[in-house]
Length: 303
Image (spheres, rainbow, N blue to C red):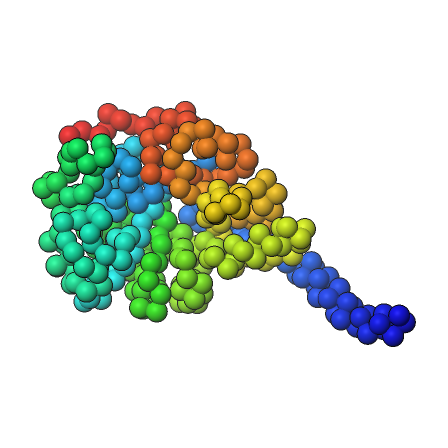
């Protein structure tokens, strides 16, 4: 028994020293400029521009959501075959447009020939009010030009395609580094983007979320020094509750802005805000604004 104790003592001491070092050196994330400018109130983020209300990821949707008075526009980026950043969610065109095939196989000109309002319906397919209305897939450059002062949440959908550098260059060129939070489901894309565009706010990738959940479960959340500023998470993943009271407290203590997706019903919105969520990413931004007692500026939405 004494021999076993001696055998375990050295690694245990190393672990203790490592934990003490982390405790002494850990720092919370600083608040980025994009969030500081928005103040302390709960934020309403229009998911793909408010895809429950109008055709997603379109200039039309972003214009309408902005007119409602949302705090941020959320959008997805892919790459055309001629190397242009385009705002589109799916890998293929079929779900939302009258086109077919992969987005990456077509040029920007070919993509913009598609009707991006073709499939949208609010009544299960009985009607398609935005067909033939000139709604198309926007280039990211158009979004930056049309909404130069609007905060944005941007998701990189494709890794290893050079999108990180293109995105950084576009933000630099348009003077919008302090107006965005960049996220991705690919850790390597986020790491590369942070190296190319230091100082631009990012959200946690999947591995970072898992690490935070594990540290919180172990009671070691205070050891984390986040390389990101926003925690964008669902309320649940399969049968696992992600947005627990404990996790939100830990995230807040580490300086993270907690943004819950995709929250579409008002009872869930209220519950998560009461839990401590800082922002709601929603397909129905009008519902969130109404819940918060904020005017939706509905009169601004003319035909």
